[in-house]
Length: 260
Length: 273
Ligand SMILES: Nc1ncnc2c1ncn2[C@@H]1O[C@H](COP(=O)(O)OP(=O)(O)OP(=O)(O)O)[C@@H](O)[C@H]1O
Ligand SMILES: [Mg+2]
Image (tube, rainbow over all chains, first blue to last red; front, side, top):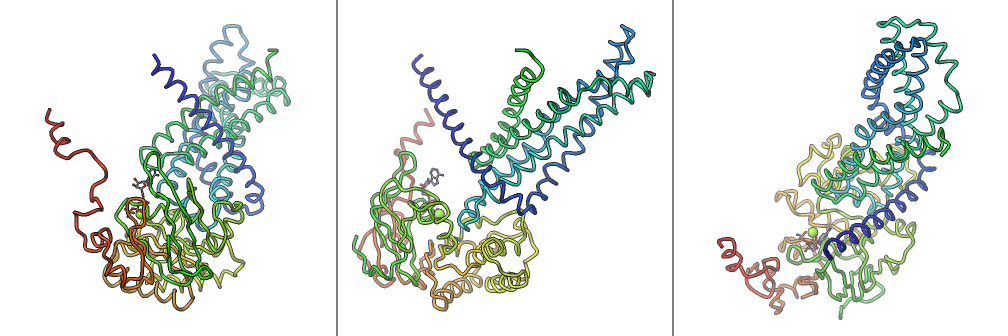
């Protein structure tokens, strides 16, 4: 029993220590952001490897999620003879929830894990120490551009995901199941609110992008510098990002749409 | 500890340094001083903390007790920006090379120049080519670090460490993995840098012959203490048992070849139970 409490205490202390280290890390990264914006060469490289290389997975997933929404939505709505409203149903689900959340989960799996592995290996092979000894701040040169790239890419990828999803719903709903093309779009136009839906979705994706970049960079930076340590850190990035995204999504949704 | 180096000419001064990793005491109250413009060697058995000492000098690790001064500045009391200014004048060759894997050889050597100087691209290019020529790898400039052998990587890292013409370079095992020809060239290079540019060199090495040949002063570390120090002549003729054991490579003596462990026979016996 004593043993259990001891372990619990140790774990709690360790997680607070880690939280402290990660906050310190974050402030350091944020303070290095202006320099990254002034010299955007490194940022552009990272926008490519963090953002552009996630295009394919985001596009394909967006298409399928939209097609499934079109299909499921049609069967439910047609029971009520309301299949004309398929457009707004698909678009609202995507823009409010599925777009930001699914795109963020995919992004954490695709780009976040890659960032952690990259940084962890740099640590394990003493590249980060080597930079420090050359008086080059790894936070400035390595972390800040990657952080900013994640932060910028996430809303754009989310927008891509949602737009492709709307197309996917259109292909199935209008193309295959015969919903009227005009009402698919006009219902969507009439039903979606810019402030409530679009802006809130964008805010979500920005928050998720911030969280994923922070988690994945810090896990790499904090990894035990061995192959096993790096592999564990990569797993932690994906798991912790998923929890964080879903938890934050609930909080944000409650704040934005709920009357809690 | 008494050293025969006078204070004005010392570049690194370590006073009463203690450092532990977990429960293991790596350094127990050591003091040493590294003279400016000379080649100082740090020797000692594997795992005594030679790399750790270099990292302490570079300000990457914090001592538990004691102080380390480089060029009269206490490394561990400097602000981050001051420490970075100091590090620009300290080159370090890592045991593993520590080249950046996303840059090729040329870009690796050019990196400190690009980051810390306002030189034109063509100036940087000729400086990099000169340094690569000095380590014999000018032809390898377009290779990526993963296409280099261990010895080549270390020579590139050496070129990078001297790129900014620092006042002091710390070499962690520069001779490991070098064939006799490269070894000869490296020894000569380190010696030339030292005599032509007045560069201070700190060499960590197990290579007794090479080290005795180029060092001006030698410290022998073992078990968290300095067990001997002096000129190569003094070290060769030292009557310290520790130093003699290390220099002659005997397995028996005050230095243990084995990492601390319980009795060997007991250990073997236990597995059979
Ligand atoms: N990150 C670390 N965490 C815990 N202990 C460490 C760590 N790095 C090194 N040590 C311990 O510190 C001691 C000194 O290590 P160090 O790398 O300085 O040895 P060294 O003298 O450079 O050896 P070698 O000649 O083999 O390179 C070793 O006993 C090692 O077990
Ligand atoms: Mg070492």
